[in-house]
Image 1 (cartoon, rainbow, N blue to C red):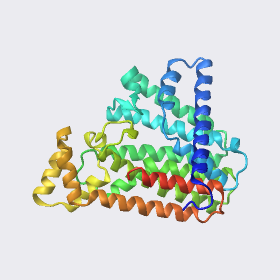
Image 2: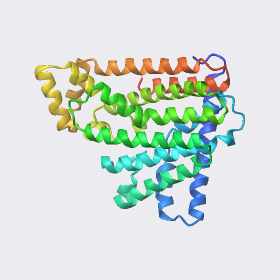
Image 3: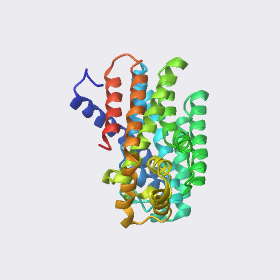
Image 4: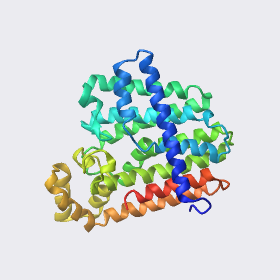
Length: 329
């Protein structure tokens, strides 16, 4: 709980950090354009700089400060590396999902074609590793393992598209690798850059994992309820056949006619089915179940953070956990 610093001041500091990250990313893209990268940099930069919360790089900058780091320039390339890699995964995800919009603008494949979108995603990966490669072999290994786990989880998610037998354990395994893993790896790496001992840095890793799981659960809820901040249509995950936790929970608890009808809706979903789908999810208390898990994982994240000395950076990280919780309120 944030008690030592004024919330308005903390929010202002977070906005300043977001501006710093945005300015650094814009400068990176402009440098590549000036160096002759041309359309691939322009298209990649169009999506990269189209907005986004910059939650990951801000968290990693703060984790570095919580760990005792004093020179932000030492960790900024790491924070940018993870944001570039994250954006690369979004570009490739959009191709797989045949998504037409990302962050409120046309996706790269919608704007420039699939072949160029694949290349633009690869280009973003390379840029990310170019920045991450400035660090020690241990940090590079953390980034590489994180990316490998993303790929493994992407494969698993594709295997579970419209798979009504998907279990909560399957779901959590995918989330840990694809969404929460980068949160955890970035916080862990930032702690090491700041000079933390291994076990202390692992505490930041656990914080990132718990926060990342909660973040994905909130995304599941917002996808079903609809939220303009998502930058994509309501129910996009359902249309794409992704088995999110509320759906998995409802299928597990429903029986007979209700389960049969829920299965039919998931397998052939359309706009006019929203009310009926939500009624079935409410009947099994699946939205409430996901909300309980959000709170549980955020409490675990905050418990890990409580192990570190009090500071403004710690208060700001605590504030971010509250922002994640409040996104679906």
